[in-house]
Length: 471
Image (cartoon, rainbow, N blue to C red; front, top):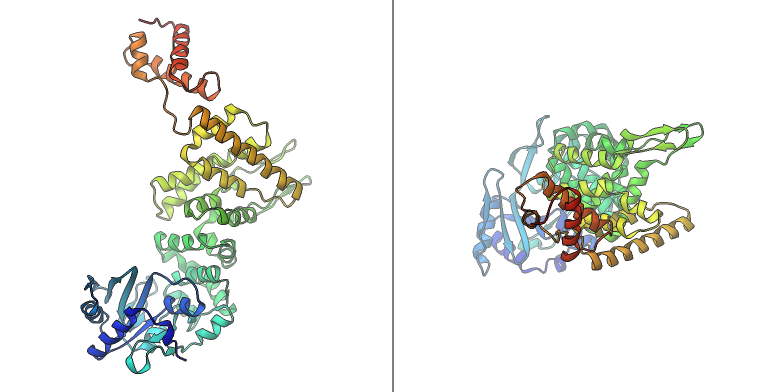
């Protein structure tokens, strides 16, 4: 079958010419071909396999391109990469691979196109289009990947036990592809993931998180997380999440299943944000509920302090999986720790002081927090659903009103510590901190406006109570 019309990018013509001049065969292979045939948005990178030296082919291609792009050579891996327009093109020589049990890094030797296709993770990623002059655009499909795409199946080219044991990251990739493409994992391959789940422990946290981020970036991440749960991978990677999958009953009192609730929240948040860290916040927002769950005869089931504990647990997860411990981690922590605040507000009379405190504590992230909390509405009662969303609209309006009037989102005290020292002729002391805190509290409580004169007068009165005298 020919797909010549799909290869209309100038780069393929140049690679074909370079291959002919070097007298080696070359093919475009993998995800680019898959997405081309599925008519998905193309990846911004293209994989080229050469039956010969991939590095030599890349260097030759560069000489034939108008701007002679720089070629990055990775001799250790036998690969090279160059950028053409907005596309990264990676060149590798066709190879055979063999693995040791304790590593996903293969032992490599030169091979044929067939050898290279054998080492691919899934049949839909083993498709190759010829860039050779005599067969340009011809599809090589030794494992019926085209048929699997038509049937929406994720399947390994060879024995799945070998495929997944050799490189356990492929188990996560399979689940990620199923989630991204809306495909099903073939029964034998799915069973093999379950069987080999423990092998994921040899994969680095960074690699695991990269796949989790891609699952979280899909339209419906719950598909992937349910597969991770079903295969046992989730219990190894995020046991804090699977701990939520239990419902207890005491004296006729039950609580909701917080695991399935969490997946609903993640799905709910996806249409409203592409921020993967806000999606992580949704995934982790209830993790503190399992360890804080208690039964009280008067109140039933309680989860007191789960937000605070959840924030601490989120940090440990970031550390364990080698995720960034910078502002991204702090953002997720903040979202988890504040995840109930707007909900409580929306259920009570919305006071200006409560909204001021919410905006002060959330700062620039207040909109993200509201998106998270609205996604947290998973009730199936249509009247309650409508009521809760209406209440959130009231909270949002209040936030706008309070922010326009009081400017507390990026709070700067209208009177400084240095000025307080001057007013009362003080040296650095505890009283200065007490007065600054009192000004902040008075503004947040609405006792005084966030203005200089009001704060100045307030400091004089409060200072007098502390036995201080204006100079």
